[in-house]
Image (cartoon, rainbow, N blue to C red; front, top):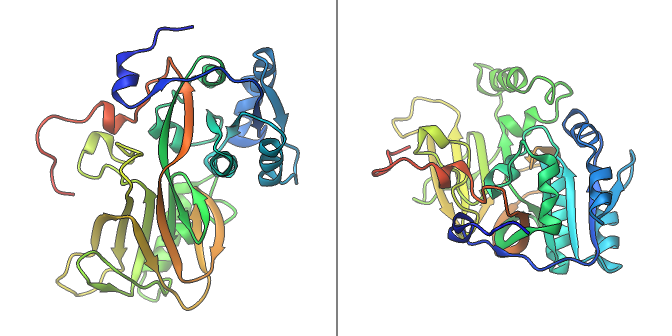
Amino acid sequence: MSPFSDELSRHGWRRADPLRRPVLFVNPRSGGGAAARARIAERARERGIEAAILAPGQNLAALAQAAAASGADALGMAGGDGSLAVVAAAAAGHGLPFVCVPAGTRNHFALDVGVDRRDLAGALDAFTDGAERRIDVAEVNGRMFLNNVSLGIYGDAVRRPGYRDAKVRTLVETAEQVLGPSARAPELRLVDDTGREHDHLAVVLVSNNPYALERPLVQGTRPALGTGQLGIVILDVPDDSPLPPGRAWSAPHFEVSAPVPVHAGVDGEPMDLSPPLRFTILPAALRVRISSRHPGASPSARFALPGPPRRA
């Protein structure tokens, strides 16, 4: 058993108790086959972890619920952020610890929870020699997410066939259609924290805890996953108004209205959400385990610059 670091304790982790019957789901197609290349299923079984390799068409949510109901004492997922959220929802619903093995393309959740994204095999140590803490999760219309829900440009872009292979180009093409002279932006409406109404929005990003926006070196990560707050960032379609086109704030609840179902990216997965879109934070709702040798915090928590933050 490895020594437990002061750094993990400082970020709220404690040594985890041994597990009796952990179950790991493995998506062999995520991240271009990252789990298969790292032999994650085989290495898990060597550690006494039950490993279930997903076949095309299987219902991951049903499998995770069945594993929890049949006596698993921890659930893990080796895959991308969308798959992680599905298994994490089952773990949270049954009060079980959740283990993230970063076998996706971007692995945003792993970065922010403090898993070393370069150490897939080492992430399995969360089951056998791990640290545990509770973190917040968020919901939109009752569906749990770990990272964020994106509406507007991104919500439309994730539905396009070429998105996963050419994300930047697809986003630019979508932005041209949404922001161009003859464009029609998604009909999203909301009221910000100052009471100002917005009804011509290009981007709405709602995250499970706020992102670091004021520190240039750590932008795009969340310094904490236990603030009990949603992070909200909006960008209006450019017009002649003297008011700032963008705003960021935090709140425990948030609502977006629309006349028709809304295209969204939920932890990177495309789906339609029926209005009104009701977002809420669920404080400390998920038990998470990581390897006791992993960082245990995101870059924005570990490498924050000294001095007061600059305004975003």
